[in-house]
Length: 360
Image (cartoon, rainbow, N blue to C red; front, side):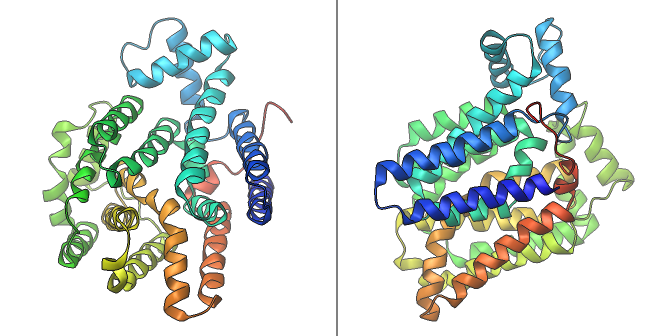
């Protein structure tokens, strides 16, 4: 448990120091060495950490002997084959390469598109993405590719956007659901659209019959060996229930509340902030709607990740709205407490609670 707090303190201290450096080249070097390399080593050389860790060890062994037979997405199979060539006959190489690809992507996205790397990482940790990187390896890689595609939306580079999403989808098929995001560039989304989403989210989460009616078609399209069986148990026999917990639900409502509160400033925002605003709000509603649907709720990651780039802009808007910094300090403490809560209480924290490494 303590290691997750140590890495958190280390990263945030380095980023706070980076903010104070006037030399841009020196700041970038410290950013990549002090944060990027440390996180890659910490995540890449873990041993037995993460709910799917031993599953990925098995995937690597099956791939080595040619027994995988299309069980995984072709993009991740290719990544494992590359690790076999570079690092040799060891599953550590596959997990290290996964960490390199995902954390290089997310660090680059934050460095290039965030106006405050400190706040962006504060949100990244608070949302639990460091735990996602050890528990849902393929999807985390796909999420980091998706966040790189957001700039193609506000820059209207449709071909490059679709190319990145297709690449992410070859790592984890669920990434293909992001493709409709490009529609957000054409016109501002009216506020009534979000209220409709809010009503649907509430009904899906709390009205069992409505949930079954909406989600039942997934039985046809889902993977037969995993998701279809789960959805059948969840929607037909009702024998599986995974309630999200009060903390997560409150976090969802707070996120929605902040975004809707700032809606009165919406028209004056840039295309970049407007699009990130829409993506994050859709993610909050999606998370609220599917909070107890296990694998389905993970689709929200592709939208919630927009918070990482959006947070610095919202913090600034909150500061202007209240004409002071107190609201920023309150928001920072909220994200700090949210991360600590995940470490000590939530499922993603428990899944990675006992950290061990091949290095120490």
